[in-house]
Length: 348
Image 1 (cartoon, rainbow, N blue to C red):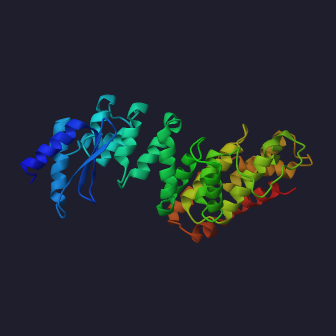
Image 2 (cartoon, rainbow, N blue to C red; image 1 turned 135 degrees about the horizontal axis):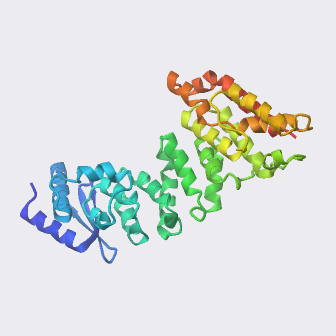
Image 3 (cartoon, one colour; image 1 turned 120 degrees about the vertical axis):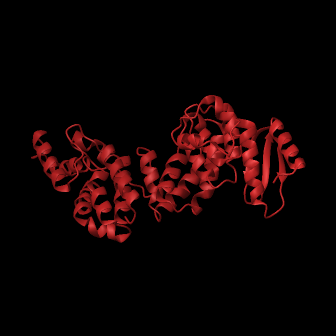
C-alpha cells in the first residue's frame, strides 16, 4: 500500500506535471513540468505492487476511473478513436497503452507531440509509438520527427520483426529525417538484410541510390519508358536481388506489391495464378499491336510483371506454413517466370 507521504508526493507530481511516465524496471515515477524539467519519485526495490497502486491512483485522479486504464480505451487505442479532449489527460496516467492511444489518435496535434514522445521514452512500446508518429505528415516537419527517426535507426539492430524492419526503414526515409550518410548505410545493410531494401523500394521508388553506376537502356517503345530509365533499372535489379534471397513471407508479399503497382498498366489486372498472368500479358501484347515489335519480348515481360501481387503467393505460403528457404523451393514455379522477366528487362 502507498503511504500517506507517498500519496502526497504523487498528488504534487500530478499537480505540477504535464505528462507522467512510470519506469517499471527502475520503479520510478517521472513527471515533466510545464518548464520541461523532469521530476521523479522513486520506490524501494521489490515493490512492484506499489507501481500498480500508483497506476490506479493516477487513473482515478486524472480520469476518475478506478482500476487502471479504461478497457474501452484499450480497444480503441489502435484505431485512432480517442477523443481530442482526452489526449493531454491520457499522458498523465503513466500507462503506455494510453500513450499509444494518443500517438494513434486522429486528433493528435503538434502542440502535444513532444509530450507524447517524452511519455514513450524507456517503454517497451517506444519504437512502435515512434512508427505511429512518423506516419503523420506534420510530425515529419516537426523537430521531434528527427528525434524519433534517430531513435528508430539506433533501435533497428535490436528489431527482429520483419514487418517492423520494413516499416521503420520506409518511415525514416521520408524527406528531411535522416542524412545521406545514414541512408547510404541503410542501403548497404539492405544488401545483406533485404527487409531494409523493401523499405527503400516502397518509399523511394523513383529516387533509389545508384552505387553500382547503373545506366539507362536504349528504348524504342513507350511501354518500356520507365523500365529502361536509370531508376527503372535500379528498381528492377534491386527487386531481383531481393527475390534471389527470399526467406521471409512479408518481404516477398511487399516486394511483389511494389513491383506490380510501379509497373501497373491500364490493360493489366492483378491475377492469382502465374499462368493466367502469362496468358494475359500475351493477349494484351497482341491487343496493343506490338507482337511484331523488335522489343516484343521485353514488352510482354513488362506486362507480366504489371500483374503481380501478393495474391500470387499468399495462399500457398499460408496453406503450407512456409518459412525460410522452403518459400523459394515451393514457389519456384511462380518466382522463376518473374525472375526471368526481371533478368530480360535489365539486359541491354
